[in-house]
Image (cartoon, rainbow, N blue to C red):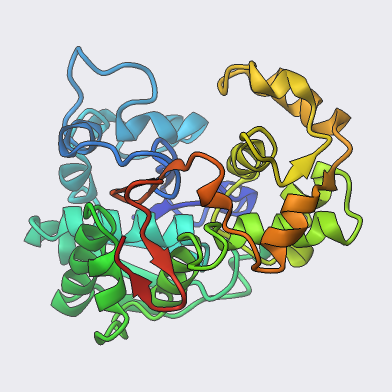
Length: 327
């Protein structure tokens, strides 16, 4: 039987090539933005289907039309661990992107309690972005068995990310993380999104200020030109929320963001997208001072966002410099 594929990116290549019996992109949760889902929510998502599951809230809702061809479609109401036991091999394809690595450590932590499932797991070491893969039949990333080393490393990282302070994630940098070789760079990228000791802003916010100061007036460059943007934690909408914070506080660092964004619901993606496209951005004098590390954005504006399990506020502002600074 062809393997079951668990991934963080539903590439057309997987779907066209017939590489696996079924490809599941477990896309319901975004662990890089907002408060972390509760343990109960995660258990419900990965557990057996019940009458209480809403659409999209069970792991089996993410196979699309492939379920019609799957040899195991009759088992889709099982828990994910039990479903995996219907296969001889289950391959984990999670690339270098932070959101993908967070999903990987989540799944490995979950599977840690299911020895029969672990025996079937293979970890593909995808050391580039999944979007760059063209034909899986001609390129075969290394596949390694999932052992206690991978499971223990993932569990430690997962618990650290969900902790109420960044201290455990910082401590991981001094540990041996070689069982998951793509993880440490992701941890460093995540830590760089903590507020700076001098500016009160994370790496993505500072990079947007740099680009706006150099004349990039349109949000397309800030949100989508990845090589220019350089930071890689967030997606388009999260960058937009960060930009809202830079522009709409008591002392804005950015001018020119469409005023309608002040009142638009964050779920109204269509109108938000149009408003971002209408915007013509510039950096304020205060923004220039922040960019020069002469002003601290957080001393003049509210901070209210999540970093993993850490709720960052003005009163409890963990900082990175590049050592962890306790508020």
